[in-house]
Length: 332
Image 1 (cartoon, rainbow, N blue to C red):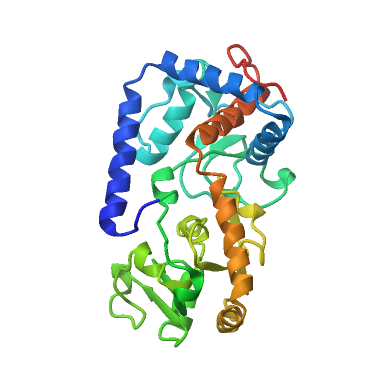
Image 2: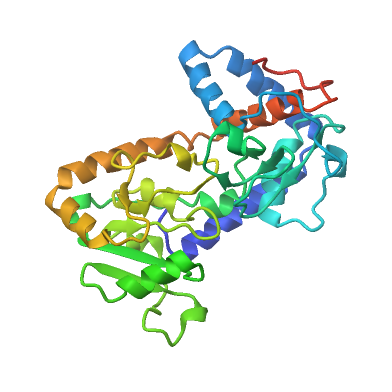
């Protein structure tokens, strides 16, 4: 983890794009060989480790019946940078290069809040049952934005006993929140984007490293998931949020209130009550924080993350018809 100022965030981006662009220079056969090595290693794992990995694969890819990828599906050989956001393209390209040129697939990049009609690779989906969202097959996309983790060496009890929120308040749920809580004595809440200039809740930018001086950091979903959720749960501050509606590779749908975060009412009306409660019960807050840290830890092993991503894609290709040639790997 690193400190969370603008310099560090820009350095994080530079490292991501430098590595990703260097990866593009590596021939596809090297990536296919790496996939074979990872699959061989998976077979040699103990049963408990295999089960943990398979549980995540099944969570991300809930497809269970053969399907046709549809008329809009493309072949790997035709997947190109044209019209794609660079971060999504680079993350997906690194994975798809591990498979044969003729595999067909559908994908939808961006902040998705609906489920596609055809099974597709996506970054986000609505939280729900397999019957509701199986067509949304999750991959770890736009990592450079969503997996910027921040170092936190300050203990919970040594932090300011208040709540902090910074962000863009363009969505109704965020706008109502900042209108209600800017200037509240237990909060430091404001919109730091130019669109709010002239409003009483407009404030300056505050890097994540400074936000970590507060005991409570509020996470509010925007277009889909909240970008700050991951680094909050990795910190020594307590995450305050309402029950999430959307999920990504981070498996937001598995987060439990009172276990991984402190749940707020849908309208955030109990924010002050929640802050006062955990100020009076710091032991409970610290237990939740430890659980949150453990949740984050499972996403921090690059080799395992790559293996799981490839298994998610492999299951998709095995079920999509007709394309099984060259998808040798792990049978479920």
